[in-house]
Image (cartoon, helix red, strand yellow):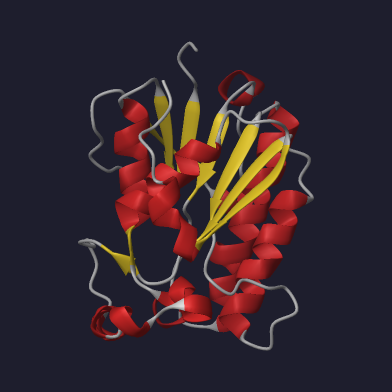
Length: 219
């Protein structure tokens, strides 16, 4: 297989950073960012406005698009601001990918994502998944990780406490609880990349499957 053109949104985040690094090892990567950031060799940045996203067909035709956009309600400041990032920006990117002729859209979602959930966070994540499915991109890959392990550039004290608890209780998380074990952010990126290149359709990897699916990127 030849080089696969890739676009990554959310390159400054924990999973997004791994996506850019891994994808740049196999071909050209365009990182869609709001601000300039250092990138590995093989990746270039383009500043975009996700509220009014404009991407060319040349950039998107035949490309694999990866979306690792996400924030927290605390950082966003309100539920409405959270939806703007975790739903509206994701949906805008998916629609742009479909219009431009992308062949694959990979989404980093979350464990428990469900558009009918009574939990706001899970409901928004589920709505984002639904928007991606409805976008018209031929191939869709979704990973639903639990707590993410890895070094973040930003401090998230509440999340760190949750990770510590998940680690401490990991041995007890078996059966239905296995999906709540903490997972390595790099494994999430590898699992998502592994979903690209398959037959058209929707493929979902639940959190407890991520470690098994975290194969090296295809070349």
